[in-house]
Image (cartoon, rainbow, N blue to C red; front, side, top):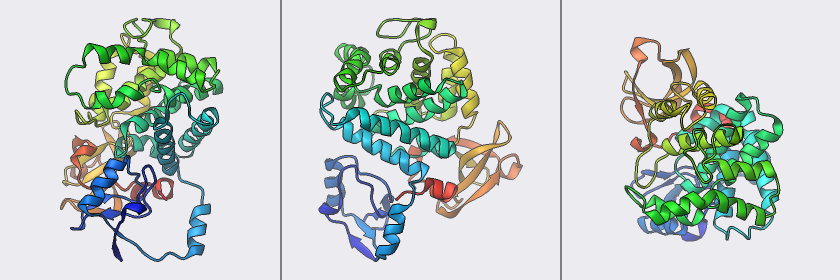
Length: 376
């Protein structure tokens, strides 16, 4: 039954229990999405927001509540937790250390449960606030890369912790940066170059004493050739975890849409980073990440020769012919069931790579990965 959504039914950061449409039936927000700000809520209510609501058996609701959250739900919850933390005064977050430990464990568990879904979320779920989304994206890929590089358990944990908190010193300037097109002024550049040290200072005040964690936050913008900041360190003076975070931070930023620019295609971002290996970025780390992600990272959107839009879901017959599932038909309508396509066959060859901002229809990851991508 179609019902108008009222102001009191929407809360900042709280996932929607239903799909939401405008008065013409156009899908605006899908189930499980969180509205990032009160201003966004006010704008949606003003435009008119509706939902298809059904009566739910309380016993069924209780069973769903008791169900273990999917890998994707853990990632969505992690973004929401960080958004809540970043909305508070940085030096006065209650129970910060415990919250970060739980968040760290949750992200790693999600990746261990279904790494493909977690990686795909970086490219396919760009509909939440960048400030909270980006550190979680970096934590996902940094953890998987740290495992691929055989870093020990303590180093993996510190790498994820540092990825989640690397921008704690950037909170005040992030929104300003996102509104600027073109070159940043000198004042903002100074503030940006101070954010690793400010982040360490804030973490210390919040009770974090883990030296590995603090060191990685301090050094995640140092470059292998000494051209980074804040200390201009080079080579072995930069911990492997910091090299991992620095590279992943760049990649995830490049493939994310911002207010001032669209996202880059994953292949373009990887090509750019490949060109910098051995100079700004560590060659071993860069080579390992490129092998881990492949030419077509999972979650990459492609247009097939059939005019269908598909999502890369894994390796195929070769590096240039990945496994894909069609999600939007040649008519432009969303397919009810994602269908496997063999891209090594001429009829289903990949013709182009797309970015998420080019689509008007949200990608339902659960239609591809089932319960591992189901959102509450």
